[in-house]
Length: 382
Image 1 (cartoon, rainbow, N blue to C red):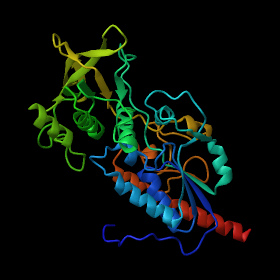
Image 2 (image 1 turned 180 degrees about the vertical axis):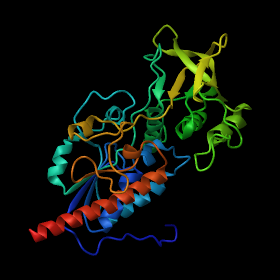
Image 3 (image 1 turned 90 degrees about the horizontal axis):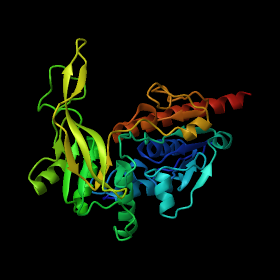
Image 4 (image 1 turned 135 degrees about the vertical axis):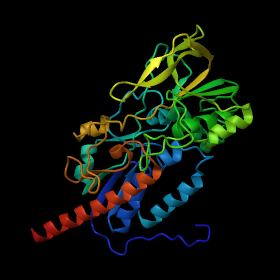
């Protein structure tokens, strides 16, 4: 890109067929580009105000410069991909706090709603690439207190305010001068740590329910399994440099959010746990007697993973789901229970890495192209 070697590659010939891509994250964008280069008319629908999905609002700027995304989007536009933002495929709902539509509404963006069944009539094929955005909640006493937020609510509002006004419009959840607790680890938890530090939080703790992992693979975690080993990510390193210690506290079970008496969060009660194997070899969690503790906190972010894609829109289309609540679609052909409708990325495989989403998007594009070519041949014969 810097040398100008990456050029738009619009198709030499048009197929006369069209595809609707729902979602503009890594899976949706990679599929859109491949489908457009194959000669199909491609329209991408995104419910946020900016294209990019997880890449735009789910990953903070210090990890992913948005210019990298914008230059790719510009390339797709030059190749002929059409984008619609602030467009929700589904029906109007009372969206909960932290939902991307709620964030857009709070910022005075007008959202257009489209019935997904209309897309089947309008396009020759439809690809769902909506990600796995349903967060795992923590339903313990005090959950209704002000100051408890899902991680993606915290991160999205921060990035949007940063891009809109360099954090000058105050339309974000500030961690400045607050005691912050991040519940849950992983990349998202680390991003909450890094963002809180940049806000200037007073203190920072990261709760992990599981024990501290070993430095090297355990005997019951052989290759090719994912290595469950101790890692230091950028957020942990930055917190250690500022505060003199790693922010992670292991084997901590959250029991109750504490109120200040006025409906605001003031802390959390926890207990330590230990993990032991039962007779079948499975690990069981047990609370440690006498380990109860109270922690100060005016801001807590919940970063405990995701439960799959939101299903309100896909329910309208009567799509089937797998046992993990993901859209049921076979890897390789990416076909769903409805002819001409495909699914790829986290909404199909569950939350995973960006590179996997890109891979699935490209694979789905190949499958859709083959489907459309076969469809065209049948129409020609008939």
